[in-house]
Length: 143
Image (cartoon, rainbow, N blue to C red; front, side):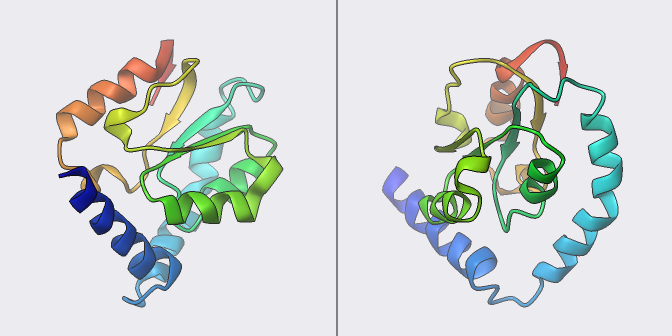
């Protein structure tokens, strides 16, 4: 079953994010650009030396401003192609890239901030993933 899912995720990543076969990525990028100042102001309320966990890499439109703002960013991504792209583009600027399905991710440390932007609509078991997200958070943190 996981092999079938892996193939679907890799194909989706290639078609949508790496090759933009739909021609619609600009819409998501406009939404990100519009919402990023508000997002960054919320993230700034928390410690800059604490890693931010970003769920899903996509085109890196959230990762890039976080890195530029000085945040340590860790990415959890189910597509090995997108993990490779994140490492290639951001290399040593990232705290880590975790190539894992959300449901299988087990962090070494808990996070102050977890960002799940435009990813939850892609998961099969939303309840399970939401429970995972809350288990990754430090007490008193927010997602």
